[in-house]
Image (cartoon, rainbow, N blue to C red; front, side):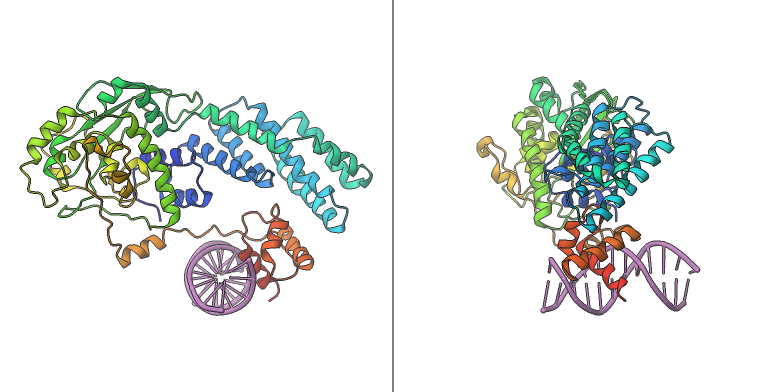
Length: 487
DNA sequence: TTAGGGATAGCC
DNA sequence: GGCTATCCCTAA
């Protein structure tokens, strides 16, 4: 089930997340619940690069990397990037060789079978397909040379040693790392990081952000090939004061001007206190799991970066809000009028108040009648496709963790909402079933070999021993398949 | 981590 | 709709 969340915001979140050292499962979970952002090939590439990094984190390479590099090549092809980096070709060649030649290490019957199988899969399968399709993005002279050599070794065991020695001269992991570094440098930082960076560097922009200024601060994108973010754009944030006060909601409309299509939608920030609020939209809660907490921490850290560079952009707004808010009866004396403006003015500070950051992976979604009915239209009026997102848990610690608690802003504690059984049901259903993938004969054969060698029931050992063959399989899959084979 | 039951996708 | 293969959940 996809979360009903603005696709641009989802993209910002994903752009940010894929650059964080988070567990892959967490990122995958988030991707599965955020709406698809298929049109963004830059994000896709970032995700693929992340998968590569994950694959080589153990210091070895696998055939999965070949698959990912092919996907990247396809993306580049779709983006009409004709000139492919030599580094991607070198990385592909090195990994292909490593994934094949490793089976020459042992001289037993199994390894011989696996070597033949690897040559069939990689060189007669992948490489030949690319050659036949005249897809030259990953084809290099070096690759062709290795193909001949490895094919020759299929028929001539006497050259195994020399091929093996030569293959050891290739540093596959190093080649992949070099390529990934080049791509990441090329893509540049995420949008959220750019904003943070711009705020750090530009005092003027700090002043502009959050209040009714019409000036725009410019942020230069550092990703020359990242057509999805555009080369240069400006940021404009406006506070809808009327809504902030009348609805006890903190609303800011953020718009990127001059950005490519899809970048100009609103992000609304709402106070965690929703009591009495007229909620017409759907609300999504995240389960309070360690994984979710980990993601929240990463987002929080980025938010704190923002907060650290924004001192107080709205002193005037505070005074105005002070006057208006004072007329509203408050049950909670700890909620100061100044909070409202801080929140409305600055998304980074909004977080501290229990407000929700759309760009913090918030999955809550409220539509405020107050905002809808607000008589004053903002210059940066929320677009029809914009939604409101509410973050319940992430902000708990922020107010208390504030490095400068005496700075005058004491923010209300967000309230954890009780998740209804129905919601829990929805949360459980957010996990998508994997795509149905039929077992190949080589997988079946390898499973038989594995069971013969390691014994039935040692599914994890077998999976680890033949990880290259069992692509996207789990130990449970192996167990289930064996059960099926032996029925 | 594994085993087993149940759910679901894919095929006929 | 029925059957089978694959995937998922949960108890041990």
